[in-house]
Structures are given as C-alpha cells and as structure tokens.
Amino acid sequence: MKVSVPDAALMVFTSAIVICSPILPLFMQARPQVGDIALVVASPWGDPAWIAKKAGVQEVAPERAPLGVLVALESPESVSQLYAYGAWLVIDGERILEICAI
Image 1 (cartoon, helix red, strand yellow):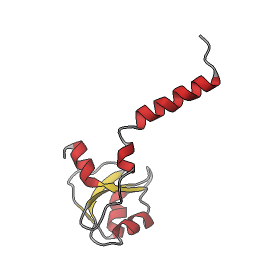
Image 2 (cartoon, helix red, strand yellow):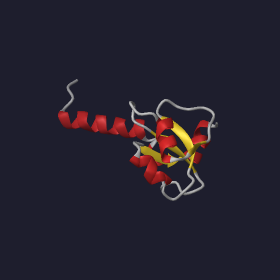
Image 3 (cartoon, one colour):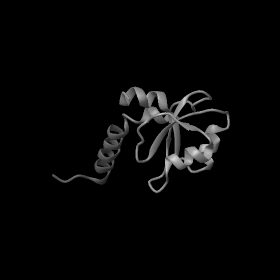
C-alpha cells in the first residue's frame, strides 16, 4: 500500500496531537502567582536548582527531577527572575503535584 505525502503528513500531525495531548493543558494555564507552587523546567544542560537559588525562591519538594524543581513563588518578580536565570518554563506546580501524586 502506497501512502501519499498529504496522507503521511496528516498521520504525523494526528500522532503528534495524540502524543502531546496529556501535557498540552499544562502549557495553556495562567502564569503562577505569588504564594503558588511552581514547577521550574530548565534546559537539558541547565540546573533547575541553581536557577531557583539565583532567583531567590525556595525549593518545596524533597525530590528533584532532572530538568525541573518545585518552588514557592515569594514575590511578584519571582517568575520573571526564574526566566531571566534560564528557566524554559514556569508552570503551575499544584497541578503537577496532583498529576504525580507527590
């Protein structure tokens, strides 16, 4: 059976949506606010603990993922500081805690 280019493109696009669908809602949330717990995601060559330390926020979880760390946002500038020191994403940590059941 020969597959045409448009059919192959449609299959790839559909597969990407199915694979990404569980995590897409996390990226479409509102920015975490002061007092919230946030997940800071760093680049593969970055250190999320170093980013959190330099941004002046406190880690809140005893466990740490290779690319992320959970922090408490302590000031209105916390999110901006995290991005300034190299965070790729700062998302709602409460949702992550619910999903992962930590």
